[in-house]
Length: 229
Image 1 (cartoon, helix red, strand yellow):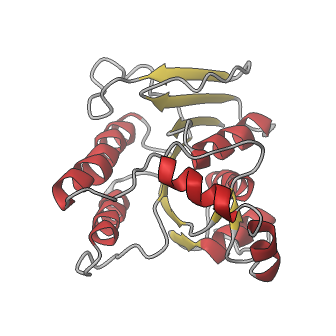
Image 2: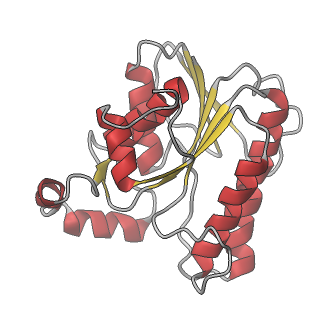
């Protein structure tokens, strides 16, 4: 399996990258982002794209992939709806529309968020935009599209968020996260379990397109019903 990862320098993307490099059935991994991850591995290549709205001239690089794990995302704090839409909906669709043209048999996995509004009509701005993005992705003719809606994620193996406010939150919450995972094992994810779940749905599919935290954990642990399973 050949895998593309967008956002591999972020906390979730770092975890997904680690799991892909460890997976015996993943032959090739290419990360796509404005900066390189700095990681080195025989099956890893980084593609630096200064403008993630524009993939002109990169078609050859983006062909021949079985799965895309789209982990790019920004906080909506301090943004108006137009700017958040540009950095969430427009940016995601710019990549997805190119990829579906080049890799029609690709499985596309998008990291959304708990509370996303599929109706696109709710009061929460970020939830509406995420919902609009999810809905647009599902209309594209990929082999399959899966929408991951994690809530709390415990970073493992040195992975950390690029967003300063998130780093502060995770630093303060770090002593409590193991306890929360013990108390609510279905609701608190780890960067490792998210990566494992992404690989599982790329390999085998899943019984539904939208996966909330408990379902992501079930897929990662092998207790979920998979497509055709």
